[in-house]
Image (cartoon, rainbow, N blue to C red):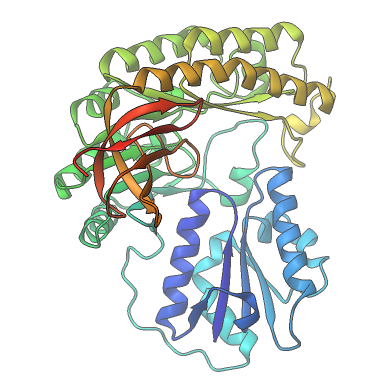
Amino acid sequence: MRIYLVTLGCPKNEVDSAGMAALLEAAGHTLVERPARADILLVNTCGFIRPARAESLGVIAALAGKKRPRQKLVAAGCMAGLYAGELQAIPGVDALLPTERWGEVAGLVSRLAGTEPVPPPDIPATAGLSAVNGASAYLKIAEGCSAHCAFCTIPRIKGPYRSFPRAALLAEAGRLLAQGVQEIVLVAQDTTFYGRDQGEEDGLAGLIEALLAAVPALPWLRLMYTYPGHITPRLVDVLAGHPQVCPYVDIPLQHAHPATLKRMGRPADVAAVHDLLGRLRARIPGLVLRSTFIVGYPGETGEEFAALRDFILEEALERVGVFPYYAEEGTAAARLPDRVPEEVALARRDELMAVQQPIAQAWGQRQVGRTVEVLVEGVDEKGLVVGRTRWDAPEVDGLVLAQGAAAVGAIVPVRVTAASAYDLWGEVEGS
């Protein structure tokens, strides 16, 4: 069978899609790049927040509207469980495959095709742990979440936190390095909770040390989705003590006023957060911090919003994302009083991004005149090299655009000659 696979949402979904692709190919199916050529249309949906669900529903509806008579449409992933009813309401959806059952994809395809399932060859135990994009790869170290953030549906969608076996992760890292991956990005709903479900307080620190010992030739290791209350002194030591670890930490803080944080079910000791960020900057030279914040949360007063704005100004985080609050059915936050009007939330988002832009611009200007390492992701026929620095994560941060000669997948020195709030320009040295 020919399969057209669409992936929506976060890097964790990309890893699940890579696992499904491996199972399908092992069972003798072929992935195609155009829906018109496919027998099966497979959409790995995202159900995290309302706009993500709207995008997923739109993609599925568009594919359903163009289906050929014998084509089958499968909605998989996060929405296929908690939001199954919304998917089933779309005419033309033939089957659902919830995120926790993605490993059954080959059998589902056989049933839809009306053929006897062919037992696939042995699949490595590491299948479904990583997704490769060029010279970078996401390595998913856990599934699910055991936190109790009042606004979040993830625990209901994916279940409690489950750390993946360290041996499997080390084996997968070795396989990724062997196929030429230059950057491994660790992802999970909360990477810093790794091992805590099994009684380890410093499981992530131990995992990073084991990974770097297993693949010492890996140039870059990046850490995403950390939780402020789980960043231990030992983890800070590990991040600071290994040059392969990118000087980049992603800490979704969500807000900076204690009352708002309490209503969110988040750590509410803002002084402790200031202390943590200070310790990280003191220990890791050249550190870039990324965070995301929610505005318009139920009950957010003007004073609470002002505290968040002041926090962003004071900490001068180099990378910031701001999102308006969306009420998610079944969450504790959806039952809170004092809803903030949507137009107020959107105005607050715009205000924070306007506050953040000069901070990001100033960081970029400080790079002008420096020579930085750039992982090359593309080269055009006119000699324009496009890539990322160690301070920029795939798909969410800025790019470097440089003139010169370089191979895709290589890490090259680039002298920075100009900067905007989000991107850098320069010249490849020695080319």
